[in-house]
Length: 317
Length: 317
Image (tube, rainbow over all chains, first blue to last red; front, side, top):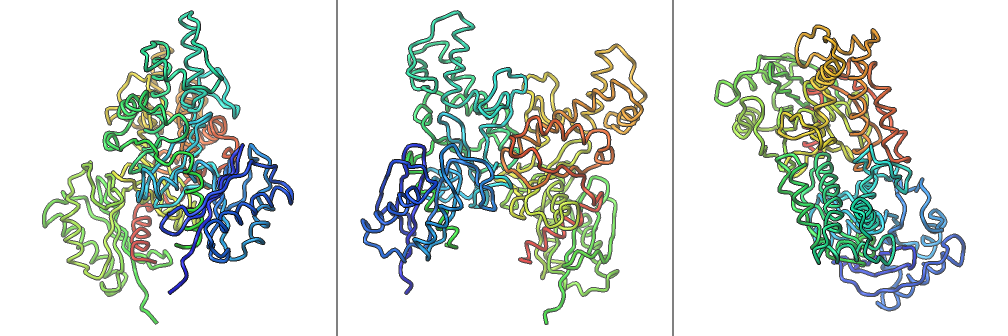
């Protein structure tokens, strides 16, 4: 009998590097977390490999039994595996790979974009468990996406597969998206977008907005929706309209079995999801109208789970 | 040594059923064509199987050496293989499959949507030869599409994968698409759409249109473009704008290595393709802007070639 094999998922975020050790059945055996250092030199790489040692030690697994290490990173990763676009954090992907490979010579090392990894996590153990064709939309400060076809992430030739936050839905928009474009999904349907929609409604109505804790704090706007605030409801309606339209467009391209909504703003899905479903039905081809739109279930763990699953698949399991 | 294996591609169109016999290297060994009968009874099924016998006889191949038969059909074919949407022609797919299987018990029989089959043909022997990730847009009376990811067609759960003609790009459009929707790509960028764009420009300008042979005869409009007709050029510009926008949206979902333009209106690509490329760059994510947009090369044979290739892949080659 072959010895059992294990997989480590590493979620490299702006504030922390989270690691999880899993067996092939998806059982989480150990976790670790360190504040994100600049991952550009020996000290930065060591922070990652030391956390590998931590989870291996906690789970009492020989390091040689780790067959794969997946890393969810905040930048596009093309199918070829070499990032061409700079990440939002200080990270040297080629050198980090060498450091990890040297530390764990028996493991396959694989990078994946963080939104794609979250989608893979949901497909392994979450709301889309066992579903081979699913599109996940991650709604946070921005809008990310992961497109899974036949069980694998569609990374794309430049890593732009699933970059659905930058789908251009309203070319006439005057305001500029963070990427320099105009009328992108993210401008209306991210947490930041909902706040922006709300402020625009207030301005139009000549009404002072409610107090907001920050420019991406959609929670306050969603709470105002629950209390019946008409301007907040109009802002959420705009968000749902664009979201429904984007999902319908995606259905015309890859026609998935299911859509998932994840990310921080998925906690307020009670406010906008039914509306988004209605808009989806309005814009979708008749044959696609019944495609379910569900809420993701793994929360912050989707990254480490998905990264481990990506590693497991890369190892040929 | 195993005997060489052969594949038959059948393109079931509105006016004719075309068949081609290929070897595994894509050499076309024999062709046949019959007027399309209602393919709903023994006589209709026999028309198809008799054409199989014809190509086999012409190429002097034992029928048992045919390892796969692919059929390109004018309706969505979901990944499960059972069409849920009615085709535009009289065809009984389950019974036709039984008839072919009975006639050729050694062959794998596989259906594919015609636009998807054309894309597979181009990926096997045409402009996208050897490309594993490509999206083909077929511009004729309507707009069809084929999305290929990792070498396989993305059929989708209801067969709506690649139904890009019905991407909703302008929800404010008052005119209705053939499918009942509003503001779909097909309404602006099909042959019919270009004529419609042109008539709208003439109406706006209070000018009598040039004589057109029919409502989908974009050739006359494209010729007027070549002669510098400003209203025709505006119509082609609208077509290119929507086409470029749709391709940019698709790139944000699957980020292919290449786009292909095929179908009847691809013969007039000289008029609109450079413009469409410019619009694509304008709407696309910066990382995707250089994705090539090429013209398909197989013309009317794309269907039989692609259907044969689908059969070859289904047979595990």
